[in-house]
Amino acid sequence: MLSDSIISNIYEILNYVLLFLSTSLTVHNVKNTINLLSFKEGPLTFWEKFYIWALSIGRYIIIITELIVLIGFFLKFKVDNDIANIKTDLNANVEVLKENQAKENEIKIYQKRISTQEAIMNNQSPIYSLLTHTISLIPPTVKVDSLNFHNKGQILIQGSITGTGNVQLNTLQNLADTYRGDKAYVNVAETNVSTNSQENLTNFSITMNVNTLGQ
Image 1 (cartoon, rainbow, N blue to C red):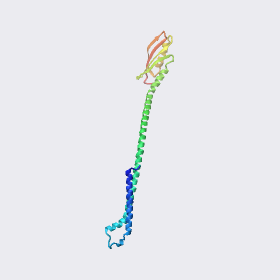
Image 2 (image 1 turned 30 degrees about the vertical axis):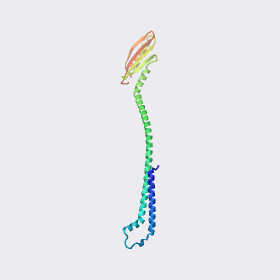
Image 3 (image 1 turned 90 degrees about the vertical axis):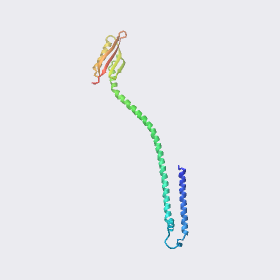
Image 4 (image 1 turned 180 degrees about the vertical axis):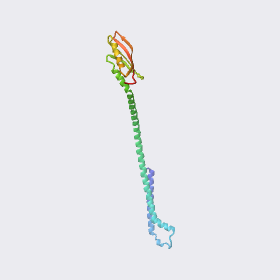
């Protein structure tokens, strides 16, 4: 909307133009009533020339100048109005960008988490495959109480075997030999072997290292 100062300026300019046009018409009527032929003979004076110029060419120049000023004023008003609209649109877009910035930060956080989890899974994939292979070599008659994998590549299996006679020890020996025959392991050893004859139960531990040279 137009401010009070702009409206007052427009009214002032329009009043000035109307006053000038009214004065020009009045001067024009006076010129028509003046008989220039009654002037004394001889060259016209400066003021007489100025009077004739003001009533003819001068007033048209002034009117054209006033029209140019009015056109410039309205063009300036239009440009100012366009700039105000652009600023309003920019402010609205800035608010939208701020809202999207918060969402973008959340998306970046989730992307970082996904990348971190993928890196962890990729790093642990060989370990997971090795542990899966280690468990697959244990026969159903062996009960595994714990299976630990240390950072230095050492594997510790603790469990028990149920059976009569030499079945327990034979099963333990076969399990250890199975790991010794697999190129994925080295330094396989049975430790902490104890047998409870009353319960026909043998507790054991097997330690071994991962073969870093592979197959």
